[in-house]
Length: 140
Image (tube, rainbow, N blue to C red):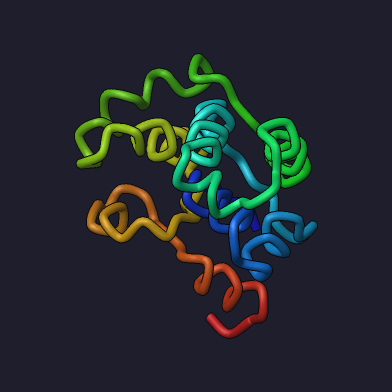
């Protein structure tokens, strides 16, 4: 199964969810992301609020774990899907979601995200972590 993965999924897999972490590393999934995922995830994980939740992990250790979680994700530069950015901007309220929607439109793939507002647009199918798990277990 191929999906575009959103930053909130990656952060969830990093912080708390063993299930999400396992799915990020599951070989049955081919995951795609805009290069923005890498910078946004690092920025989010290194905020003071999340740093407190990470306890003793140094910024360098955060980057190492992040690299491990993203090593199977196929990252595309914005130039690869730039033509879809104007359409994507019209579909989302939070402009930080634009590259993910644009990439999903470009690749014609669903988006894996737990961001409820993204499910209000109808151009790209959005699966939650629970949906992805159900699909892999053959329950959907």
